[in-house]
Amino acid sequence: MSYRPSRLLAALIVVAMPLMLGACSSHANDASMKQSQGQDVNGTPTVKVTSVDLGKNVGADNKVTDKTDTFTPNDVIYASILTDGSSSNTILKATWMFQDGQVVSQTERAIAPNGESATEFHIQKPDGLPAGKYKVVVSLNGNPVQTKEFEVKAS
Image (cartoon, rainbow, N blue to C red; front, side, top):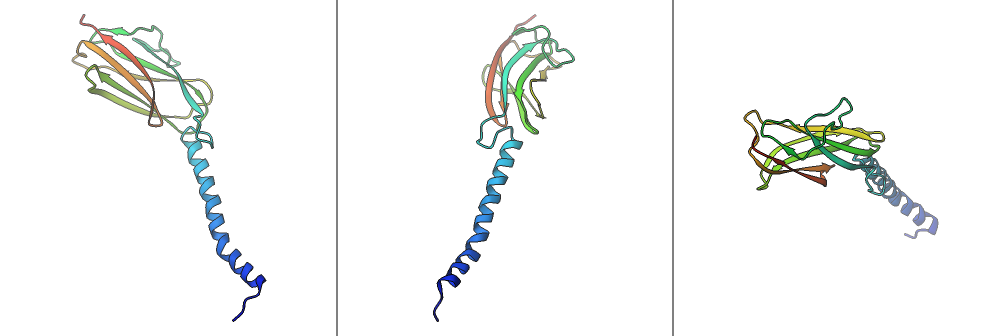
């Protein structure tokens, strides 16, 4: 049986077309996934953490009103995470740790910022936090991006 070049070419097109369409679809899905994770199509973050402020109070705008890095055991310790950028779905996480590396608390929030934004996290223990040095590690979509150290001093 002999094939003419046109039949062979048609057969190759029939076989190759679904593969090419699948690759295009996969690329589009990758781009969509990156954008939903707070990244542009190249994987560059579209939302970034610009600062982390600690204090004993926050305003209605979720920003710390009295910045400090020294607290007493019964204080509510607020962290205001300031971000810039736009995303329909970014995960912001605060991990509060004691000086020995022990995780005291973790909280995460899905945010959908459009420009500059502030997100509030806080920690408080009913029986008071032990005196010592602490830190809060801020993660964006699972990647640690900033750390802020603070101290709890006995009153």
